[in-house]
Length: 400
DNA sequence: TAATCCCGCCATTCT
DNA sequence: AGAATGGCGGGATTA
Image (cartoon, rainbow, N blue to C red; front, side):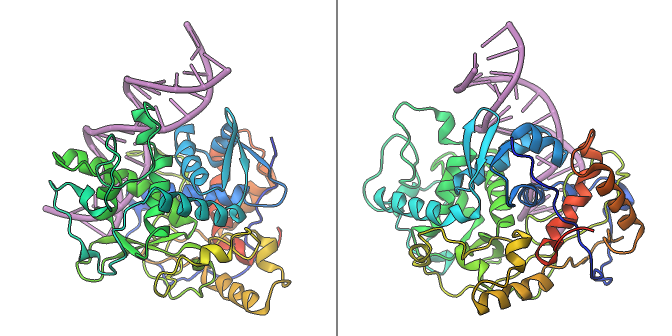
């Protein structure tokens, strides 16, 4: 497999000191440090770089210090948007962000072909109400393929094909994305997404619906860490919702960040739930942009059809590209802004894990020098490094 | 209290 | 049969 070179840690800047608040450190375990979103970010930092061609699941798991199970989650949704492709058991090939435009385009075409829901983009999420026991299918155009999804005419289940695949995270991800790329909706509430994707028209037991919502969160967390979507609220109800940033999100100049950004928590603290966390971890969060995207316009899909390098995803794009002044002026300009905006902003969290001139910095450097990412016990050392890289990657150029 | 979603059991599917 | 995948939902953490 291709052993990716170590991600470059940060070298400058002071984190925002105005970052205090109740820290999980006080009571050990913090789930925020282990979110799928952050794990995904770290995963991307680790592999989204030149020279990476294939990824071994075991390798990823050990480098990121998590169990395989988590890697499957990430890999499934990344594969759904083209970033990865399964090569063999345990092996994925890295396609990169540049593969996303095409993947989205395909999803769009596929969705349209399937006549995916015209739950047209009524910008008002309340535009179509969904009652719990209603048959959602009526919202989705006319023909419905009988067997499966009572909600959308989404993804054609291979005939007898497994019930399993039908509910797979990968398929759900694709359908979730189709919701956006096949319509003009820019924002879809969590509820709607859940119902449209997994809607079990009738008998939606509470249990059942919370279960599916959990999957939406999983998907949203990783898509969010790629900046394909963003967590928001419906304008009226203030209910949780997802806003499609898509390809355009990368072009936007990020706005001021607020609290913890959705799906961007620290991960990989070695402690387990309920145990005391003795690791370095302070908290990092809120580093994501609040890109303001205008009204939805999926035409950008066509514009990027060639999967050119014109798109960079997430705050953790490869350093080389982020730094490269070779693109057009505006883009470079934007990336300059991104770099500053993406500097960590330690908001409402306690002790800061600083990469600069602190004890943690020393630890980090130490980890770096010792491990260089080829670790005997990666879980112990790598994560802070990756976290740091994730947050700072855009403005880095090597270490030390 | 509601929203989030980590975590790992265990059913399936794949060697 | 054993290993690889990944659905699923209990229950803890956050907001």
